[in-house]
Amino acid sequence: MSGATILANPSASGGQVAAVPAPPPNRPRRDYVGIGLWISLAVSALIWALPFVFMFLTSVKTNADVNTAPTWHLPSVWQWVNYADAVETGDLWVTGANSLVVAVIKVPIGLLLAAAAAYALARLRFRFSKLVLAVLVAGSMVPIQVGLGPLFTTMLSLDLLDTKLGLILPYLAFGVPYQIFMLYGFFRAIPDELEESARLDGASTFRIFWQICLPLAKPALAALFILDFVATWNEYAIAATLLQSQDNWTVPLAVLSFSGQRSTEYGPLNAFIIMSAVPVLIVYLLFQRYFVAGAFSGAVKG
Amino acid sequence: MTAVHHPPAPPAPQAPPRRRSDRRFVQALPYLLPAVVLYLGFLVYPMLDAVRLSFFEWTGFRNDEPVFVGLDNYVRTFTNDPVFYRALTNSVIWVVLSLLIPMLMGLLLALALNRRMVGRNLFRSVFYIPAVFASITVAAMWRWIYNPNVGSLNQLLEAVGLASLQQEWLGDPQIALYSVFVASVWQGVGFSLVLFLAGLQQVPAELVDAARVDGANRWQVFKAVTVPALRPTTAVVTILTIINSLKVYDLIVGMTGGGPAQSTQVLALWSYQQSITNHDFGQGGAVATVLLAVSLCLVVPYLVRTLKAEEH
Image 1 (tube, rainbow over the protein chains, first blue to last red):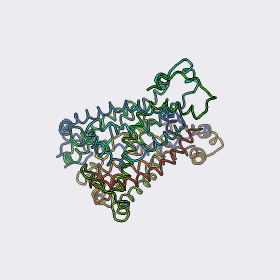
Image 2: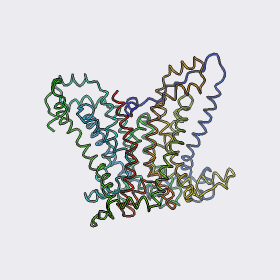
Image 3: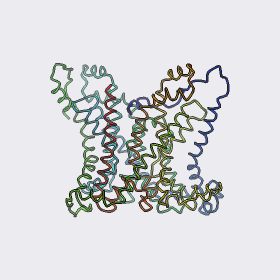
Image 4: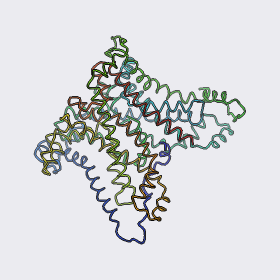
């Protein structure tokens, strides 16, 4: 099973399919297994959600509250000002804008490059196209840290250290190959007859790419767009290596710095952590179904 | 960009396949080139440069010339670098634990959530949402939970009368690695859960029904129908889990920085710290090369298999 088969059906686990049959009709007893299962699931889910609850409660407490009462107590004073404090001291607007600019430039360019390359590999198959695909994907699955040191010196000698361009270039290099892999499967699935009849009608290779293949891949492109946005927003290792001045930081760098330097300002710290995650949380809630497919692409990033 | 305006080419089956393929290559080039150039320049080159530098001694400063030292860096890494062995051991521990715990939990949760039930989507989201968060964010959260004085975990233990179990979760070299691992389980379960859920959709419902009609109980159905049908998914989850484990970096940087006393050091982090922090690109390159070799040994067979399967 390749990632592409999953991608082709992004809503595969999205809901209504329940493979488990109803209990046999000759046994009309209650489904105790089901009830037990539900209870254990609910308990596990509660445990899983606890960190969120604790963080939220701490984020609206004063330090005095945190020091005197257990985490799960409601705050004696709801200290919403912690959020404003965190935005202020953590430079959230600056770093948030940086992250947004990087993502808004990187994600569409990356997708376009990936789609073009995937089209070449899947539809204009030449002798070694499969080998090229394999080499591209293999590199993108190797941990980034292998090349981080030399990446730093490369950017230094190109004078691109601590710039947005210097960050976007490696982001493209590390992000594009797997998108090629996903789109490759998608483009391969397009029937040859479609392309041949377009050719007979006089369509150029470019028109076939732009007006036939790309529109057909829209669902895949949408999923990849969402996933890549989240991955770019969350990226830490490359950004930490290449960005130096605080003015250029992206959000993850600010989170790490905040949690290191202001670790005793409990309220603002937790408020800052929550706010740093809000954009991806919103994206998740809006585009939930794409994340099934995304598990695959997320897997080979970072 | 000449190929873009190539005249419409009717399929010519008589042409020698070699020439036709060459022409297709020229046609493909403009589409392929931007991605390939970026890939070679900013991914392959740095990685190969790390391999090259592993044979040199270099501080990484621009005005400093690398000195060729042959295999010295490898000899030093393998015979005289206890941190390397700590990092290697921890990476192996991490891989093994990741295959055991989050993967198994993901499978169990997927089996449970594959049934129709009240609140299924909510459950799924609760387990999956941590996976969309930045690892750095997760690290910051758990650093707070583990805070020895005011952290939630120690407070919880005290509240339920287990104060004797309170720990310096991230400060004790004996347990710090496992503390970080717990955070990674919290974040990572959703990943295998979603993959297994997707895999379960491919379990043929007719087979399950048929087995049921033949009087098979739940366990028998699971063993005879579900497990075989899940095999391809399990293979994918396994390889991706291993690769992800080798990539663990953000969580460790965010929670312990490799400490205390290098007890949470892993290969990816040690390579970086040797190069950038300790200004020893040679040693860093040697560790990176080891990591590269290990990764390729895992990735290449997986890709060959996937691409072969795609053929059919």
